[in-house]
Length: 220
Image (cartoon, rainbow, N blue to C red; front, side):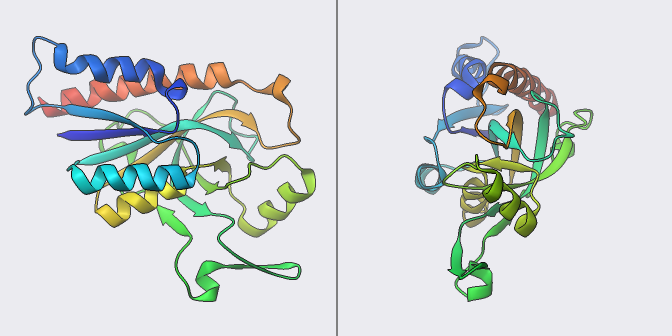
């Protein structure tokens, strides 16, 4: 089984990177069992779409898993907590008509909403992560007026800069996919003192390590 782990930065998945790079050095490694790769795309939807599109055009995978930190509009999600993203929207893809936003779908030029195609429960039944909807943006929100506006329009719970692009690329390549995010901050006026990036990264990598072990067991 070939698994592609995808992250925007090495910082977010440092422990997983070590685990993946050392799997082929293990004495019991067999290509016929779990074979995983970590792809670092760079930050943002453009970098993600290009990097992932190139990777999937030249390699075959049974599953792609996007891992990263994210901001949360929903304060019921604890800082450092993990969520499974089921749906992700390209929030800015469309046009303004005075005070009204026209999504690309309404304009008839494409799609902006993309979904996970592989539930986490299929491979890790006891994970019990909360599920959430997300938006993908070029500019993360840090202004109260724009936060209220996007929430009124889309009502998303999580915000990242890559998720929807990941779902789109996987869909186009026909690769089953899922997205897991660790909440590093709440979406509000920029307040670095309140961020919990270290905790989010720690919990994300702990989960990723557990997931790798679960996948190995599933291959036995």
